Length: 209
Image 1 (cartoon, rainbow, N blue to C red):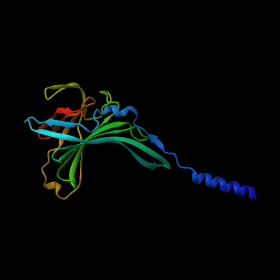
Image 2 (image 1 turned 120 degrees about the vertical axis):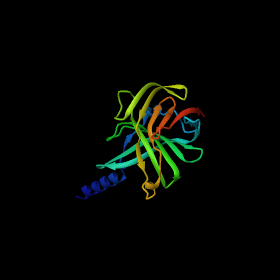
Image 3 (image 1 turned 135 degrees about the horizontal axis):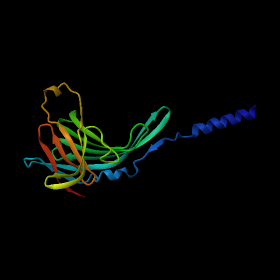
Image 4 (image 1 turned 45 degrees about the vertical axis):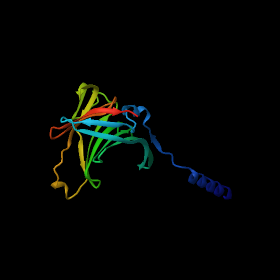
């Protein structure tokens, strides 16, 4: 009896010393779908010749942990940020690996901070990975070539963004122009943005660092 009691204590100590192993969701070679490293300067122009310059704020891989049905999960995510020179807009390009509930995808988000950091909206579109013309969701298009600011862009994926607004009582008083289509390829990243007033931003140049 004494021997069994001692063995039980050792077993309990061993179990308490064990750290729960989490299931890892890694990015692997998904990072190749974003050609930018977050240090570039990216410039767009509209149809009137106005320039919109974005400066890289960095790119990094983070780990998000969660528990589901008694299991531990660690998800690696790759995010890249660009802010315009006036601090009004932010572009975010992100990559997510395949998990137990989602296939891998790339997303593009344009956030408008025209009013303040507490009130803004974010327009976002997700593209399934692999990026393939036969792997498109509803409201997504593929162009084998597309003329953007007098430069031919190839293998371009386009999608209608969803809109996420930060709630406020002021929002009904604001007249905002929203993005209506994002255009992306894995050679240059975001190459064009259409807006619902008929205006557009087209990629002018990238200062690669």
